[in-house]
Amino acid sequence: MLDISSKNVRTWSKLGSRGTLGSALLDLASSKEDLVVLSADLGNTSGLGRFMNVHPNKFYNLGIAESNMVGVAAGMAKEGNCVFATTFSNFLAMRSYEQIRLNMGYMQFPIILVGVGSGFEMGMFGNTHYGIEDMALMRAVPNMTLLSPADGAEIIKTVNAAVEYARPVYIRLTGGMNLPIVYKENYEFEIGRAVTLREGDDMTIIATGTMVYESLCAAEYLAEHDIEAEVVDMHTIKPLDTSVIDRAVSKKLIITVEEHSVVGGLGGAVAEYKTTLHSAPPQLFIGVPDTFGKAGEYKWMLEHYGLTAKGIAEKIFDMYVV
Image (tube, rainbow, N blue to C red; front, side):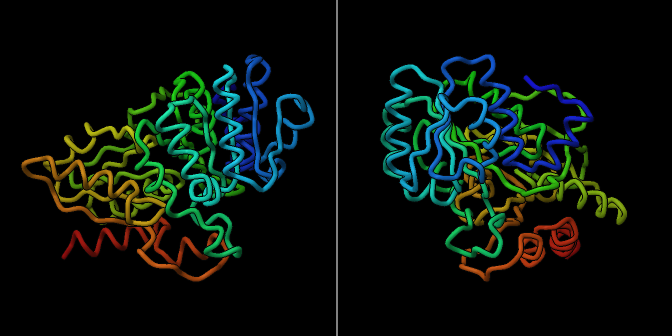
């Protein structure tokens, strides 16, 4: 596995989530003979340019035919290959849903799907290209594991862990170039076990994807107003690490932060578990409202929906103080 060094961390940040995915797969291919990577006509766009040049016999472009790509992936997985299949998250999750449900959920083939450009990363392409419902769809598929890494280092950890996991996996990649850095040195990563990045007695912020970095910054703002927030990186949405919620029941507020619809994603998963408890604090859902919005540049979209450190802190402050 690639080292989590300061030099590599800076490089992955510059490359962004897609370029880091390409680096992870290129490294993995050198030691894993049975690795194959499938794309729905987005090889270079998915950060796979070098991989395609170095390993042309391990790369298959299935064209703009996402459902067929998942079907081919199932056949390759059945023959014993380690299969990654990747394209934009919205097309992957929605156009291929029946094939994912049957070939991955029902048949349990260990395909690793990678949805790139999740959330608002596709910017000016607008609602047709926004991936803000993929977590809800993937959560509903039985036997599916859903991963959402926070930064470049965690993308490397996630890709390698998914290979060893040998079960149906969906990896959701948020953020573009100059990806915010959360992890600057090596750390322990385990599918299904969240990472507590900051301690705090007043409330717990549970975040995923690039919202982890924004939540850490928001917690610093809250601390300036004597509000101490625990921040948790929930990199695995399914199976959910419910011990985080058990630990938070004595606090005054639980906040979930995601670059996804507030319906059916991280917030929904946390809320579903909370209903099984005898008592739990109220929950603030921070994410994308249940509506189709405007098209805009990525940074503007995050600001518009309050998915920045400032926006997150202001929403928390308003609810907590009132």
